[in-house]
Image (cartoon, rainbow, N blue to C red; front, top):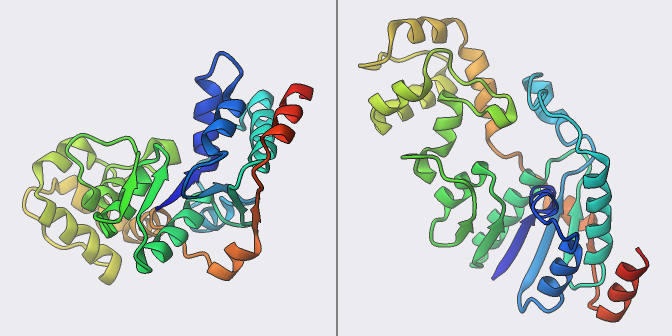
Length: 253
């Protein structure tokens, strides 16, 4: 089994929900002797740039983490060096893309992968290999992993500042069948035309006629980008289990 942590996502949630300040020590205890491979993936510098070249509004609403969270990230990164954890940070890529590329690689060679994150995007990986991938993403009501990609294209994702198809919304999502939604989105992506879909509001169809390329752009940024395995390998660092050194470091900190 391979455990892959969505580093920024997981670390921030741990830091924000731990009033004791012991989160780094808790992680140390958890990952010192995990009994399986552990990969901790951080967002790379300029990781948003690729998607913003396609859709400039991507994650523009987000603010930088407060200084104490960044300090916590640095502390966790240092503590993980005293565990056998593999840490990865690839410049120019978001951690999600690295995680997706690693997951697909390990699934291909027959490994079971568990992704530690509450990011709904990883439902796409569960859909690709439901018998091999487990992910702790926040589920959305009545949205199966197979439909996660289509949901984000149609309804949008406020957390990534993706507005989705104008006027589509939750109501249209619930009225249309999965087959109709797939036909709509796949036809737009592949052929650049809007098919006739029974039950699709006229106003939505008209908006789509004028915004086919925008919907195609949504699809591009919602999908994971492939990260070359060689580039991932070149940006890996492997820690070494050493509780005494970690304990001393944390006490000094």
